[in-house]
Length: 104
Image (cartoon, rainbow, N blue to C red; front, side):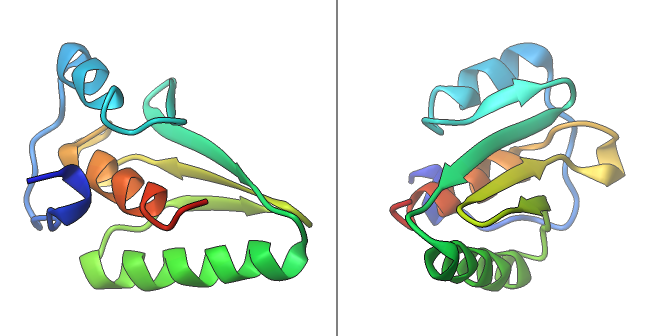
């Protein structure tokens, strides 16, 4: 099963650095910035930007795992981490894969 098809369990364990690096290969376009999984999505205009924000909000609500978003006219910077483990969990990578599947 691909990451994008997984659900986010309520209780998770923190990832080791090696585990995070291995999962990073499964989410093209994402990078590790400190203890966060980050990607900036670029769009043609504000309408497309907000459509992506709304689609990502729907996904976040479904899986109950919410990122930090920084929104400008044609970009959205998304940052995931898992507060309950004070770092990264598999849930962060699952959600990143789901956003990649939006086709942005």
